[in-house]
Image (cartoon, rainbow, N blue to C red; front, side):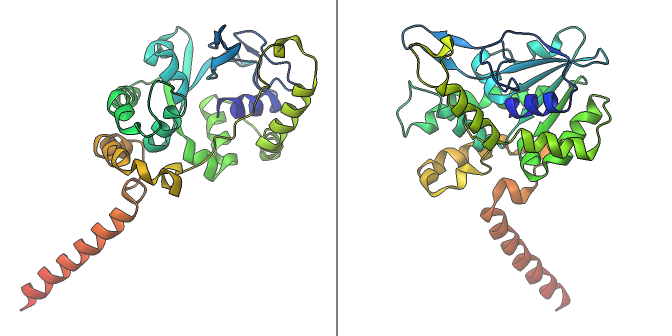
Length: 272
């Protein structure tokens, strides 16, 4: 999502400057605004592809955008949030999607050892998200809200940044920042002779915008881990506005049915 937001800000002509250096020579600089890459000389490939984006708008106010994968790989946590003169924008996800996404980046775990991965890493994210709730300079946006209404999502970010943006400009920015546009530019870059791509694999645009990936049939084998995540993370999810229906899904429906039957039973006996 960091790349998508960066693209939109470029399209909206509100991105004035960005700390870092050019990595990919994209036409619209899709992914060249990142300063936290880690290069693995043995494989000649980037083993971390997780941006932290530093924004400086024309009004002179500074913002940091971080997503959950960035925090996981850099371990910075709230450190960057405390940078002088920076307000922070953090993108979060349902922790089941979050942990599943992070798990796919790992190589030291067996393919089906997702439960052990969650035991080792979940608590750190829960503590981090809890800390963010009390940090006044940080505004948290849920990834699910972006997928539900991208226009509203961008408008809310604009408000946080004290920016007035017309709906027409927002719609155009969304259209020009889509995964289809990114993949088209990916194709153009991989056909080029840019020196950056020598002795490495071709650059690949990843479409990670899948909501409730944990519900897919292919991930049913991880149910034990998902139950563990909800047991630990449900209180924090509620604080971020996730409804009970979202957190518990079918289990919530079953609990509601049982509760309704129980209440009807009590009511009936009271009447008698």
